[in-house]
Image 1: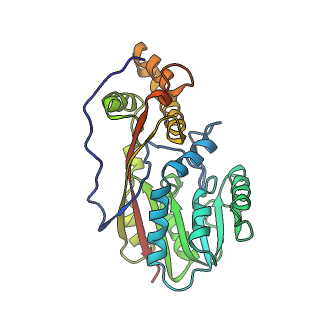
Image 2: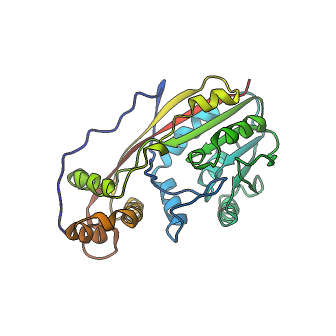
Length: 303
């Protein structure tokens, strides 16, 4: 395998939050694709479901830290939770374990994803408390019922009308109910330090989407919520390349390659294909991977 060493990046950090929550989290240009409670126009393909599963496994600490924060700041009994843009249900299951007395409603526009949520809930032993609802959170006529907590992870940036979506989420929460929004700040980095510079070049060749790194503070205020608290979730994970992290990295590189390959020189195309493949030169042969990135968690209450 040819390598293209670059500078070792600093360990990621963020000063956006009012307090840091340790954990792991991917981010996006888009990063791992999700199917949300609205139309999703890109990254549909055979790798989607598996990439979401691996994302939850590799970043389990981040998800645990985020749901712990939600549990900490939720007011009053939590009997009903909406998971907006549930995807395959990793957040749904985490919320079901975090709130053992609550009904968890997975909301997504994809019936295929909701079917996977139901299967995963049964396998996790929480199928009796997990229900699903196919809906578009930005639609004006969807009534999701009253909830104590609304959770939206890496989904609201894809809505057709974010202002309408936040208005609907406000309407769905009871007074005192908690809104928790988790969004990716930047694309995940999945290669070790000696390949970090080359990975940056490949991602740049695929094009960036800076508009997809939202700051929801204004929309939260406009919808009528209290001023939000923000926490920064940081990925800093070293993991064996021959385990789940290796499969995750390979699928992420396949996703990047779908956009970047036409803009790369031949030797870089060959290296990217090798890293993302199963044969010689695969990312799984690198020994140890360094997966890193940041997410922001907004938490706020309905007055």
